[in-house]
Image (cartoon, rainbow, N blue to C red; front, side):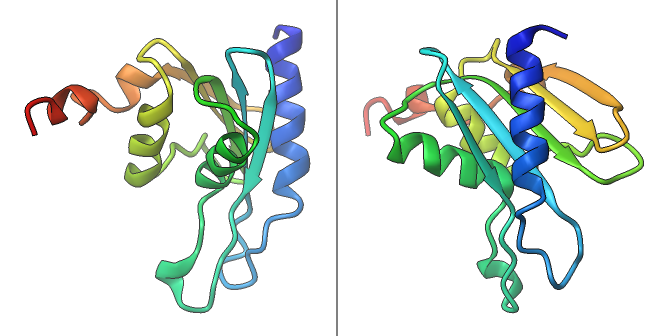
Length: 135
């Protein structure tokens, strides 16, 4: 694992511990790197009104935007699960909004299993800006 990948892994692990998951107990952490090398992290935040919660990936993306970032170069997502957990459909679309198709998405378990994909493989046929042309 490269130093950059290890840095994302550690940032995602650390922020996962701060997740607010009192209802499911399922803590998720995400860390992303921008093209400039800045790292932003987010964790899931549950709410008793379930649809009002926030995914870890969405939190990391919001932190990136708030910090002035505009492009995801890589993202790492970690959860305590038997297999690496992929981002939900909504988060796949959020990632695709800010990441080129060849950006790396690493999904991991707290036990160390990892699965690496490209954004274009994670969300083939993504709805994008090009679909809005002429609107």
